[in-house]
Amino acid sequence: MSKYFSQRDENNLIRLEKILKEDLPEFCEEFFVGIEQTTTTLTRLNYAYDLRTFFKFLTTKVSRFEGKHTNEITLEALENLEAYVIEKYLSYLSSYKDEYTGASVHNEASGKRRKLSALRAVIKYYQRKELISRDPTISISAPKLRQKEIVRLETDEVSRLLDVVETGEGLTNKQIKYQENTQVRDLAIVGLLLGTGIRVSELVGIDIDDVDFENMSFVVTRKGGARVILYLSDEVAGMLYDYYYLRLGNKKCAKDETALFLSLQNRRISTRAVENIVKKYSKITTPLKKITPHKLRSTFGTELYRNTGDIYIVADVLGHKDVNTTKRHYAAISEDLRKKAVDKVALRQNDASQDDE
Image (cartoon, rainbow, N blue to C red; front, side, top):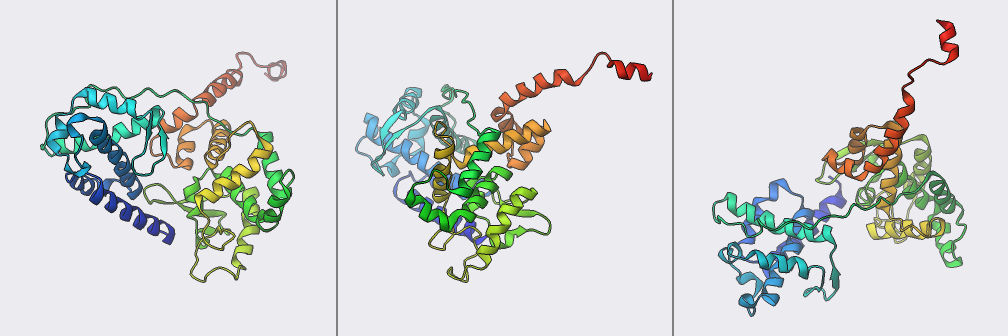
């Protein structure tokens, strides 16, 4: 695993330890130890954030817990919660003020489902341990997800986006000054996202040594830490090649900096910076679409599915562990492929073929 991901895991564990110590009931520590071997540090940290929200809700919105600290809540109290309290919690999640950050938070169905899932994970863990016998969430239906249309770029929009990155056309004078120094890097970033479908976290984690132009490939670290080899088209390899050798010749960054993509401060670029790069250029080419790195990933997945018709290849290249995730995302494209399939089978040979017989 690269230095970047090792450092990220270390930071996640530090945050998790702080939340466990200050904000969660004591019984939660055993839960997090128990799931350590089957989850990533990021998954556990997100569980901690979601559980913290739930237990804070109990101590501020449920009368019998008011005045208690979140770490005073017992496993027995969790087991004996009424279903109504869970339903009230899901309602609360629609709009609330985060007691820890002060931010206003709004959750759609997906956010509510995730937080309910975190709570259920704790309950099921202790049921398996036979430390509790009752699941207070068993009668609760998870909020129904609305099927969202996937936002993606069409072929002509992809071309325009790459043109803007190359030329800077449409940028403000201030943006052009930056773009003069970052154009080659930005084109490599946008091209790699569009041409391989990698996640933004995977892109920022790429090190110099992960790229192999001889085999037209590079290595990414997937969710869960798996290292996977992906391949470059000639077009994307050309974009990346130009930046790669500029990066090798960069004398301003620290000698121990292994990152491929650097910020203007000559440190590993952040996910936020990549998001801003994509946003800057896409606002010019597709102002009515809110384009993010994930939308570029969807664009790649759509094109790959349209050209192969093989959902399993798409799932493998995108790094989806469950092909059903891929199917949900690209169901609309399946309809297009089914329509095209009608013309693939002819009931009668054309006249020329009949004459040959």
